[in-house]
Image 1 (cartoon, rainbow, N blue to C red):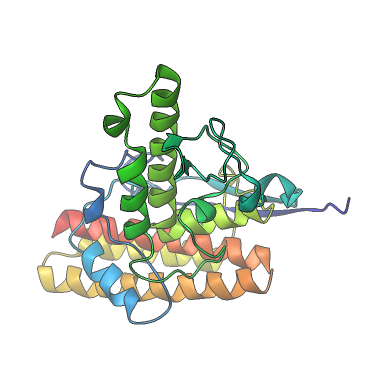
Image 2: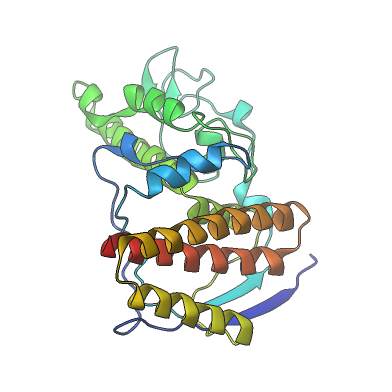
Length: 271
């Protein structure tokens, strides 16, 4: 099997303290309020406008050290034929949930998040395609709806419901979705090493200083608008690089998206 390994290094500057490695917080119960990021059209604006209203803790401003290491792995483990799934109870065709006997199915790790939400496996997704499918699955899989079932099936429901939520959370976030779709292509994004790009380091310092020195709402709003534009631009760069299978460029785009989102979060805290 053809295999190669590329390495992309980067470093991030901390702001007012050390780097943080805290994982993203769990979604709130009101998942519907999370803005789905979607395609390269006018839907960017709706995502970014809603993002202005949120105080995500997904990324801290303390710039985390990243190592992006590409390992081209076999994509076989991420692929499956949904038409081959059979119900454990009645042997009928079933995917997560059997419509014939109304039984929740056990977890199949070969099923990816795009399959779960009925989407084509691509970075650009259409607005409204996530939340509706997510809600449809929860109407069938939520543990509260299967309380009369066997213990085994209640456990299946809890696992499937959690996985559907994880799929929604991942695919509705542009950066998490980018990392995930790279994984499906066999490109591992590993977060450890420092960046050495002088141009990028200089830009990070300028952004940090601009936010620290801003003393009025007008200035902060101007910085935020600039960061929103950059975030949108680099999401498009990622999509183009990913489609062309230029994985190093795709990883660079993910890093940039991360920085700009952190800058937006820091601005929001000061507004």
